[in-house]
Image (cartoon, rainbow, N blue to C red; front, top):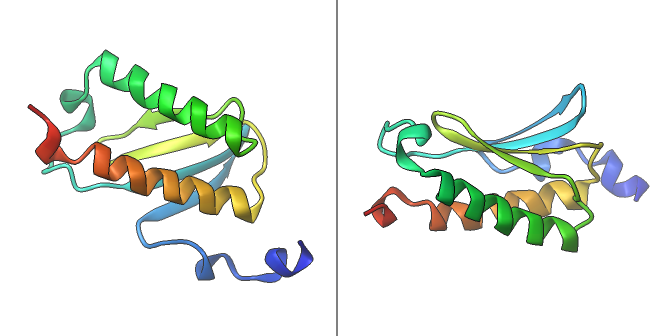
Length: 109
């Protein structure tokens, strides 16, 4: 564990991914190219519930209970109500990559 903590964060963070501490925990976000259409205009409340449901299932398996997905104009952000370990940040990056495929603008009817 101390070896992972000694590794510079830039060595495991992917481009487009931002990790920041918030007053209530940690946020991991990824910028997406959604054809410059604000995410709020693309995704319905049902879409948002489905994405949160997928995150809830993922979070349970990775010790990220309480994680919440938030849509920004050009990004998805996952806020977790605690500090994350490197392995959890990497897992969230993978989840965001998977969601990118699911949320691809070409999939929107």
